[in-house]
Length: 355
Ligand code: CTP
Image 1 (cartoon, rainbow, N blue to C red):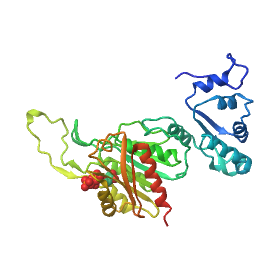
Image 2 (image 1 turned 135 degrees about the vertical axis):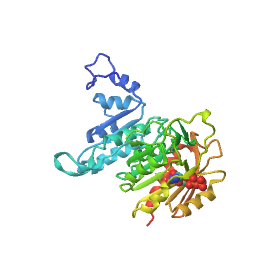
Image 3 (image 1 turned 180 degrees about the vertical axis):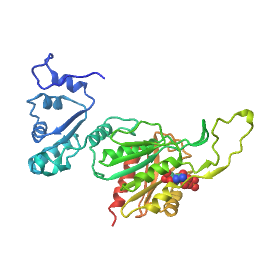
Image 4 (image 1 turned 120 degrees about the vertical axis):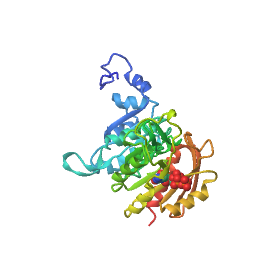
């Protein structure tokens, strides 16, 4: 990776107009930390240094990560500047509650680096993260631990063959990206080879049994568990230890059920924990969604029609019906998997607020 010199001045560089050069070259501008002075200068257009001049000159999205003492953050002048910049399209991340300079505690702490990275990835057009997000992060999952599963598990037949399904993991990865974007601490247990969304802790698994043990090892600490994975329902009883050869004749494959991870989660669910199940339906997903809510005991069920090309496995778009134990029924899409992820997490937030 090419390294760039740190620039501090409008005047001492080789080119006559460093702010416009930097502004045009940037895909994204991040200011971390953004001080009260920086917010004021940017809000009022006071371009008396290289940073503010670059911010005024750029047409790239801007992510601001304020950090200051609580009293300063609460001041109406700072709040007015933040509101102005937000209305103009700047993306704000933080500040967090926590330890401040000098040992004080309160709101004003710079957001965690992982949250800043996740927000930047969400703002940029990240295909792997589930699509472009042109909005400021609403940090309504701040501080929550969210566990998400993704991808289709593979059940081995022999060392080189498996029973699998066509799930790409894109919906689960988009959910992980969206949850991190909204401030959650996200653990993604994935059977998909898709890139990990930034700011997310990832555990890769292959089989339903591996997914079960990974999920159960994290679920006690999770406030929300989203089972977006297409977990195999059956697996071969016998797994050959060496490759099966054609000359040996047709193998007889006997199947057994895999562990039902969702059922295990519902049984162990602690008060306040929200469990979200998915349902891959063939045809109209609405009846199946309601039925799965009742049979699984999940708090929220998200069902899609995997018989349709735009909502099936491996598509870049999805259309779902979201139903909840609190009586919600919402149709979403067809739209990007990131937009579906957003609606699912909105449903989780709404369900959490029901007394
Ligand atoms: N699931 C699970 N463990 C399994 C199978 C599925 O936790 N062994 C979860 C999935 O992650 C999903 C939900 O259960 O959240 C429903 O999965 P789906 O495959 O749609 O439904 P099935 O339970 O397989 O029911 P059916 O085949 O009858 O549609």
